[in-house]
Image 1 (cartoon, rainbow, N blue to C red):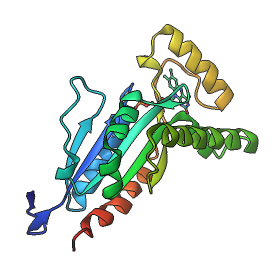
Image 2 (image 1 turned 120 degrees about the vertical axis):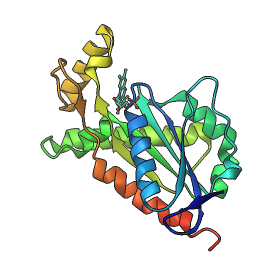
Image 3 (image 1 turned 30 degrees about the vertical axis):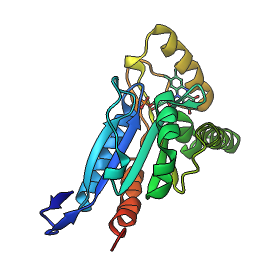
Image 4 (image 1 turned 120 degrees about the horizontal axis):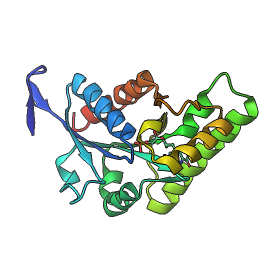
Length: 203
Ligand SMILES: Cc1cc2nc3c(=O)[nH]c(=O)nc-3n(C[C@H](O)[C@H](O)[C@H](O)COP(=O)(O)O)c2cc1C
């Protein structure tokens, strides 16, 4: 274990694992890591979708925060595979799942209609239910976080499709730039809530 110079004690170690397609979930994972480090924890940030897959011995960690984005109604396959392979270890330690989607942005959009917001909230809930069903893991803590529309990264077809989806969802349709919906304060609160769970283990 690593020393925590700030506390003069042994710092507990947390794995922040993420799966991303366009990069927003990586940014969210890094922000979570910064928040946890600020709370005196040692953190490894690992991309479960990188090839070759990073070696991961969860026994080295006192807690795990997992984050994955949603595409076409499903969370990243690399995260589903990772959770299936490590479910038993995840169930033995403080752990949480962070679901990153555009639907969460629509669900939170105060300027949208109640019907649209309810529809988006249902989509968020359905994708998480599907993840739980596919992995067999029922995380005790689940957080939905709004992602981003990164039009400048998309190819032509995906840009046209996402503009169509954004129109229906009440999201931004200006494809000349990217649009970030992530509520960074909400992300920080996830870290704030998680840190004490890890710190209290074995104390
Ligand atoms: C091709 C495509 C399909 C998507 N499908 C969904 C979807 O079914 N539901 C949703 O809420 N968001 C959907 N999104 C939005 C992503 O979840 C959002 O852009 C997120 O920030 C992506 O995170 P990442 O950059 O970490 O991959 C989709 C985005 C793309 C580009």
